[in-house]
Length: 567
Image 1 (spheres, rainbow, N blue to C red):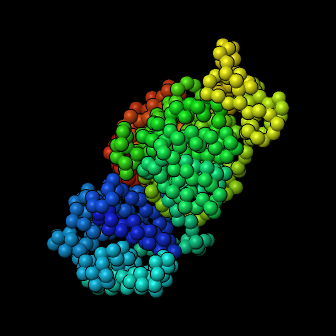
Image 2 (cartoon, helix red, strand yellow):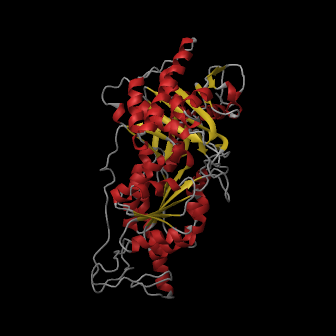
Image 3 (cartoon, one colour):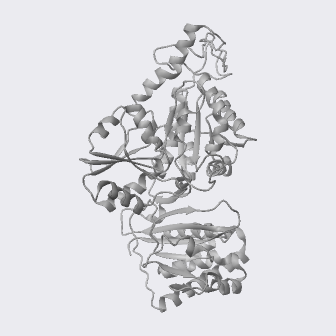
């Protein structure tokens, strides 16, 4: 096999995340390209969770339905994944747990872990089994395990080394029974894959924000966005960033705005339900022309919805949140590289135009991980736009650009006056009708006009001389891109948007050149297709929509596109 999909399935609390962490890191060091993605229930214990790990000699960045090797750790695991199991799937499980089912390769995990010291060694034994089946080096895995558990002390290290040895022995028994598994490593000689960066969407967003100069983050915990503030908090000393868990989302938003007012670069991270409480603060940002960066990790809504599942359902929320008219930008990364670069770019953009900038991700994108060679730290250089004030400083000075010089209290001789009321050029409240009109045009029309001249253009993938065109945004990118390769249609193009608003003026040209346009979105109404219609008048009639809390798979997209194209 050149591309193997390994799925681990069991209950919360059985250590599946630890197995994933060990395997992805070790397999990457062993020169495999790695991709992993999780689906899990909103439970601390029990339920049924699964993790997919793809290994390949070539880069892999998307979720597939296909399961080549399934490791079932609970009696509900096989039933949970029955729609993804095929005749080619090899199922491994402890028959004491999963039952005496046909076509299940018995692995006596309970007896093995009891012999070592307890069921909590399940993760390390399984890592040994999988590494043994893939014919990896036990010696190198033992060295990896020593480093992985070095903070746990010698006794824990030795127990886990024993678990690795037992796992390799179980793998040997399986291979001797006649089962053969061959995975091809990368033959790329231009780089050492073992030295690649392996990280998640959560880490990419956090690192991008830090690279953009973020020195303050506030949030009230809400899945799946909490990981961003958790990462920054755990690395706050290294990056000199203040991470503040607020008492609620209202405070979190106002703290982030306040950090910019004081000369910092702040962001807040939340999900749709949390952002619903931030809307009044968003309007304050719009009225006072104070920059702010807002990260929304989308999940199925409304209300609490499905807290640990995925959806692209908050685009309309970001577009129309807040009362009144003021400019904003909505960005949506399509892959881990985008998560880093767009998060970095968001801070300079917010700073320059003095507007709120949204970064829309989702549970699928935040939790997935894969390896990449490197990141270009020099892309989107960090730019700062604070001015030193003079005595006659006017915070909201009217000019041709619509962007007034932004000063901060204590930096210069001028007085910085800001208010949530309508105001004159000095920042003092006013009800003058002429000034009101000019200030609205300044905050909305003039800034939007500037934005439309410097948008991040969509990327055209697949057939450049396309006859039919797929439209996607955000986390669907890598899934659709791999589906294109499966479809092998030179007349099929894919236009991926990473800036959703404002739309580039040129978008109409892409749409008019296609016989059929198909929008692919993880929501029920086709929110981005509706935005395109509102902005351009172009109706996208063919839509592939998914809203069951799960991400698209490569096979699913390919099948549905074929159906629409009549192939």
